[in-house]
Image 1 (cartoon, rainbow, N blue to C red):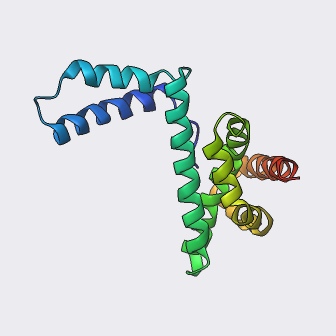
Image 2: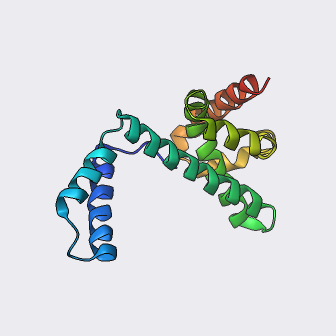
Length: 157
């Protein structure tokens, strides 16, 4: 399951970003600029930090949408695992995007564009996807998924 990222995850990502920037732009890159970019990305409460976080969440949704679409083209365990990936994004990020939609027109457009697919995933998600969670957490994630589904349906009334 994709859990909410920790501060340690963010630090690791920023180090990787710094390395990628140096690799792509060369050693002549002004490290002060890299440090400023990392500071902006680290600050999740700034306007720019919130925007980057929103883009990241939309990226998770794009992956979930592709996984759901591909799940209808394959069989067996892979089919179920692709649906599981979709369920994880839905149960974590639907409420987040709904909260962000008044602030970002792009979120509204994205959600409207994928409304039918998201509703289909919510309505056709097999219970068996939850078996991939830790045994003692299965019911918790099932309830969380159902809450997100209700939230989505209320949002789209």
